[in-house]
Length: 341
Image (cartoon, rainbow, N blue to C red):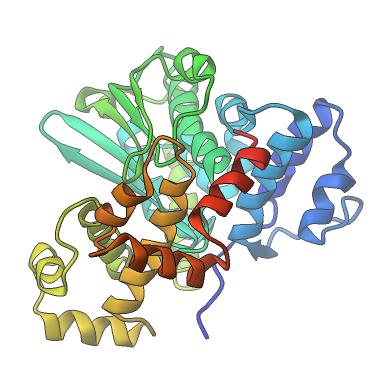
């Protein structure tokens, strides 16, 4: 049985507060988690990460704010992220803060990762979901990237702006708030959620930095890491390669292993150790991408079948019915009537 990804229960607090400001009862939100708003939130308690992501989506619907996550991320206080936030604001530079957040992110949740990836004069801050069951995640993804940019501006007391912002979800009808908050080109329907900065921003000093406090917090975080370790990223790396290749490319086992720098035997063995396989992951990614593509009304079903590597449209239709219990056409009609985006 696979472990359930979790997040600190205190993560719900910032959602409850912003929703309450919009007139939404805390009980109506908490009910979706089976959580009573009058009960105290134990600092050590954790809840399923997928429930938190769903809570963001529900908050957007109940408040009528389709950019709920974006607005929350732009104004959130670092203390809302517990030790992760305090370590960030007491780091010496913005780059140091980003690297520490990446290292200790599993203390907050093991359902997603934040990675800092420098390349050719830019630095990519990449937010990746590790839980394959999470598909509706626009609000959480937008909150996270908006928080990275907003907190960066706050702690450096500069008006830093990204070079580019990328999201996995499709473009909402209205992107004016995205443009206002990020002040950068934004691309949707990408393979990952990420924000790109010029490498020079890494050296920006943090005005609130307290090196002594940062040292104490870092030691404490290191002590906690064995209890909340970062999950092995091999499965996520396989998913990323498959997501890219399931776009009219070559998602074969041989091609995937070449891109990962592993032999087929090595990959299969390592995946078995994590209770999965290449074929399971390929089927899983096909299912998730199929549901994402079918929601895009401008994509023909034959095009989707080709992108996902099906030799015939009929094979795709059978697979989709097996995955969802409905046909692509029926699924597309249902989401048109309920999609809050």
